[in-house]
Amino acid sequence: MELNDILKKRRISRLALSQISGVPYATLSDICSGKTRIEKCSGETLYQIANALNVSMESLLEPHLLKRPSFEIFKSSVCHRLKESGDIGFLIRVLENDEIRHYYSLCWIPECLYLLAMTDYLCRIHSIDLCSDYDDLRTLKLPEILYPESLLIRAGFSKDKDLILSEAYANAIPEFKRFNIIESEVRDVI
Image 1 (cartoon, rainbow, N blue to C red):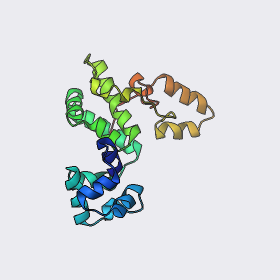
Image 2: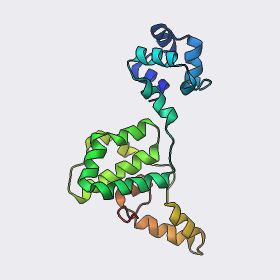
Image 3: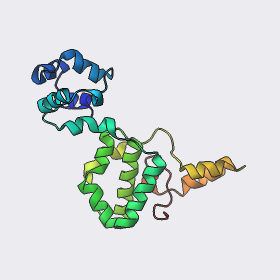
Image 4: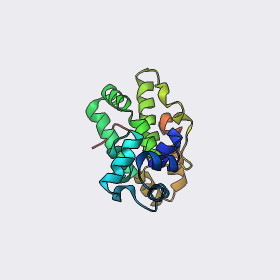
């Protein structure tokens, strides 16, 4: 979780954190404003901040060290995990590890909503009650429709681009379409 988010959530000011941690206020201000990258701070500074907030140093660094894959690679990875784990195994792993909330905390909203749509879809086809822990996220929607890249490429080479996209939209899995994600097949992965 980002340092600013931790401070906001815990209602701690930069000044208070400076006093608790012993890290100079100017340093904390530079980190929080983005002037100084937290992953470039000394181990001592990271330790002091983490210790004062009672979090791990790794949790402070994690959002800055993760490499975000393309959305297409993410979707493919999710579908492969589904294929390997089976529907129920996949659901158990995603929910036990709170992966949906993890992506949300990283502000990776398309990934968060894709995973939520997948779990909701699997719950529907297996007549399993939805996990209410994510009801707040179910109110979200991407600002623009997100079509698969392969479909956009195919439509780009067609005279009937609008027809191809409207058919894909009409045939999309409802749980995905609710979030403005167009997905029609999650099991046909190679």
